[in-house]
Image (tube, rainbow, N blue to C red; front, side, top):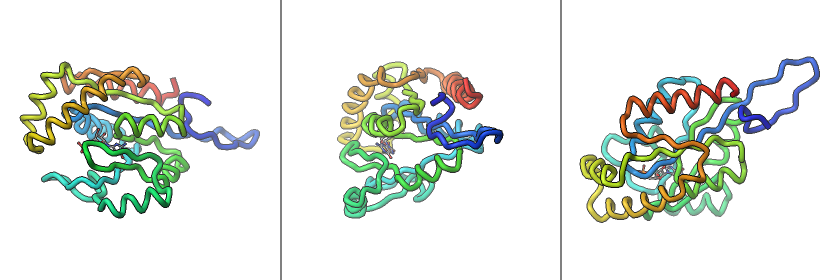
Length: 205
Ligand code: 5GP
């Protein structure tokens, strides 16, 4: 399998080989700027598809159901676990998050490049199924910087924020499991690095 393909399809002799999509996975601790970077990436590549995750957490102001996440109940999430509907799922900061298997399979079959914004546990599950996935870890310039960014965001109460900071430390310690690392010490620079990396894979290098 080349770096270009996540899934291989049979090709008939004489017919041009079909293009297959790349599966990009981006992870980062909360507050590292990942959401902004993912949005910028999606704006740049309008033929790329973004996997909208499902979550049991409540929506933040400005978040829309079906755009940022599908917000579902814990009961519904657990039902889908029993029905084996998740390509991966994880409990993060006391809430469940998951990627729909059906969505992922359809997106892969369509040949489009896909972007997953998921945590480290979810990434490890996807890598088992799709080892050719391109994994990218976004790092904040420092832990202190992360705390400041989280405080200025002001969207979580202190208890939630402390939980997220603890989790951030654990996630950052796993960054060597990713193929690529980008330090977001400057948003424009990090965006350019990310776009260049994605372009490289899309070009088949
Ligand atoms: P937030 O609540 O800040 O939007 O996201 C919290 C964490 O959950 C982030 O690290 C984010 O990447 C992760 N996350 C979002 N969607 C998924 C998903 O579908 N699966 C997994 N495993 N993690 C997710």
